[in-house]
Length: 325
Picture (cartoon, rainbow, N blue to C red):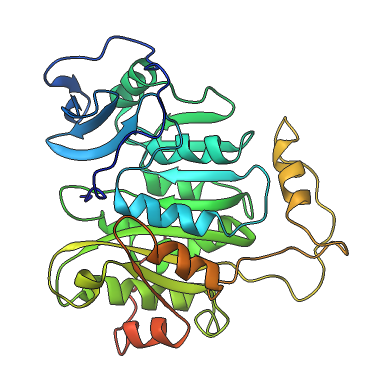
């Protein structure tokens, strides 16, 4: 489901960081098999295959490393958020490469990774040096159930990266999913969606229309809605991954003081770090030049569609009308 970026030399000469010997060959998991394959050129880099599909790629000596292009694109959006730890919900955990990256870039973040496969989550804890709880909690659950059970305004970032074969499960697309993601995001929070599609990108266009409906009629015009992919994908030349992003609007009035909903106060501190001097929340503007620049300068350059371009991409596509997950 993911394409790698251009090959490059390791950025770190640190020793390999393992919590257990890596297996050779497929290992049984709850939903099939998992296999860890080392990169023949860079032995510290491994790819986790779930049921034969590359699902996560990690550098065992560099927790900040991201190999898959769509994850690099997602990281550019997260970098727009004000400094400080984040609270992140990962729908589709697998090897937790993106969660590992977030903790590396923003120490002290509180993250929840959800995956349907309980045994897989046990194994990746054994195989890879993942942040420990409460920094990263891993839960075996349906992604839709985890989303609908989350509290209102409880996350800064929600990531959807869930596939059954080459498709996202039907209950995790469309207006029902988008509305639930909007609900659980804090004002200014960002939803990041990994959408795999083929020409003429009908699914991606309908997903953008669904996000526009859930995140408000001015989402595109106000720089809160975007789509990103390689130019060849956007031009309809091949199948590939698009990253869709939507930012929850800010309240018109300054938010009332809220109390910590967790037993620790890290999320509260993070929220305070993302407020203005007068208590107003700060949100990312996806029209910022630095976002487009960051995406253009990736190893595999990506094109950002935002504002009128995002509206034009959706075109006349109808939202995918779905119920809540």
